[in-house]
Image (tube, rainbow, N blue to C red):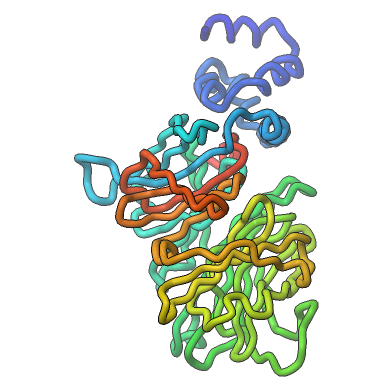
Length: 386
């Protein structure tokens, strides 16, 4: 193989070699870097990396409508017979017959031991520290090429000493200029503090910039709402924007950040999401639409209403689809594109169909993080930064 590739590189023009290499999977390209200096130069060139990424992205999106499966389940799990901090990131295909087929398994670097996965997009994963004093340390990780990039955001300052500090991080891809961006939101709850702040990181420029968020700066602002005191994960990427739940002293809403225009807006929540006192709310994607899980404990037991925004950005389109029983006292991760909800209870990880009320115990042990994606792709992103 090495001799054949070397001969090809010597006899064919560079543009033809680039076109051929552009069709190959990431695993083959990482091996071909050792064939010759010219191959290594081509594969690590930022222009080739971008070209290869766009080609893979288009192919993965075109396959979604023709797939014989419902998508890909991602999860992390501890490695048996290893140190407690040893974990793997696994990806499985969700077959239409409800079985799972593993397609990849990557060891998570021990450096990420005190970090949690907070987002993933087009083959890149974002991790943030679980500790408030270290939550300015963020990593971008590309498991396909086993490379990562350490990013240093702004630590909490003296202004944040009082109250409960909260940091929420989201990862997004800006298709208009082929750039990955990270949004980091900081707020102080249960105490005095400054306005909530935002930091935006651009991979293309490898730089951060600060943005102060005030209620007055949001489209849809109404007087007397007060400052944003609390921001809750997760950070959901949909329609070119990142979304998270935000709270003031007397108002709650979805804070939306447009990745391309780098502007914030307010999206209204359902006026009465649970019809009783809501104890927990969580954003999610449900069949490609923005959704709200409103959970509450009551005298009759736990309940959960699933609200779906049928027309994006239109508050009047919020529709209560399902009211679910006390099974929702379990931990909820996310939804599949088929509308099944992935939750973890005493039996392990299960998928639950809110329409039929049927549940399926998944053959996955000890998952401590779960995600779902309609398309699975690998890329060379971060390779040019080694």
